[in-house]
Image (tube, rainbow, N blue to C red; front, side, top):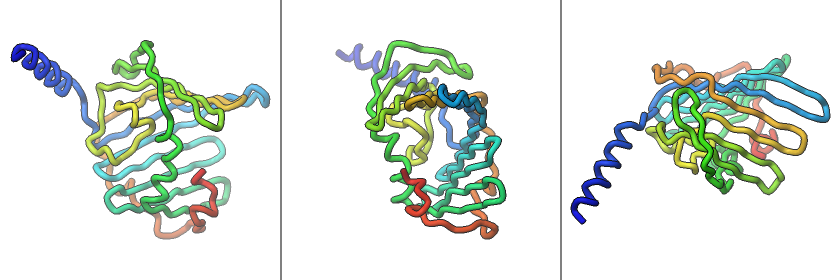
Length: 210
């Protein structure tokens, strides 16, 4: 009995030592969007940055830029939209942040035996379907974890760190694949919300909570 407990504790210790913890850093995803009916093929970059309780993501495409900034500790943030000549700011508080994430949190995944290596990390495949007909295929690694669990990156219910995912609905499929990950310090200014230059739009009015 004592020997079994000792082996278990040793295994847990080895896993904990091997796991990298991300308290600050940047992850960049290549994003490919495909639509079979309209024969659309487009590419974007999606960047996520964390620094303690601070979170920022940014989607950049040929038509514009969308940025989300949120401070978990303060419970405040904003979504910034820049398309053409329009610059819109949608302020958020904690309840709206949770509402924004709610759809992904409700997904129930089935973990498969399929694995692949992404950025040097072993990733396992998981699959889920949503009530609106969307399907999700995710590759996540348990070799990485976030120091701040409240900084809720996508599909955190899997207990790992997502490095690739595919979202499909009807004829449109979006592929997200991590192209780089670093643990370099992120300047705190990256999480500042602009004081001017944007038209303010209410969260419910914007429709971005859906």
